[in-house]
Image (cartoon, rainbow, N blue to C red; front, side, top):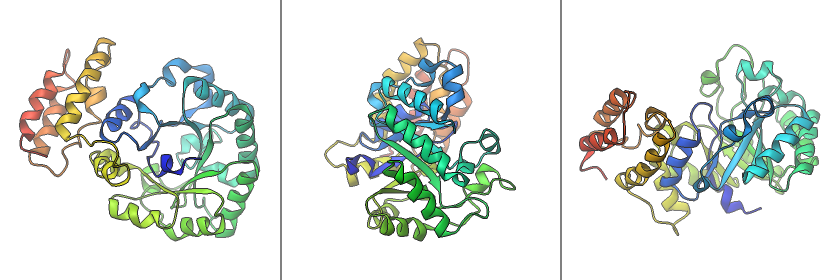
Length: 324
């Protein structure tokens, strides 16, 4: 496995990392690995897989995240992902949403390591691309390091070599998904210990990481880092990451990013996609720059209007002239 391809990645985030957001992020950071929102096996099998799996060729390297707990269905969906051109299939074993838990997938699967191992085994036998797991360090009162090691060891025995570990435990009841991202304490030491105890595995750190300095610190202990909300709230952070870890590619300025995004927007508008479906992802592009609030406000007020087009972006750019 090429570890450089997993050095820094952007987390799968429901309602955020859709194909429009991923295309935008790829303009900022050509090499950072991107993940889809979680797609359930039921949605893929009973819905429209061509629509659900659609992505722009420029999004590579790109991983598909699946939600499910039936080995046969997951294997079938992994094949769909491979045939669609994804570079990796990831199994969600970390989402604490009640809706996810009621469907018997997500973080509740940490309580069923043997079932997860069966799922991973079935997926790996069905596809040639890497199959990975994204999990938590624990769930509810099953939060001992011994339980986590048992989980990792069991899944690794099924052939999984890549684990993305959110350094917080999850509470399946009593906390909302948002609270589960904030209230349980971050235990980076636990994930770092995993790497020491399982040196043969690729261990990716996830949870609360917001700066390049923090990434540097983690990379001295683990194989890679996954960024979540920070990459959405402040997407141009990825430009700093690109320059730091993948210096062979040119980093675009914020204005160049928008200019390169405009042809994509034209194409999407012709396909009846509303402008706001794209502009909602770029509100944070000028975070920390002069005029950033006016940029956000103008886009929020005008992008949703009927027949709104790229002129809305061009007019919004007037508020941030002089930014870098």
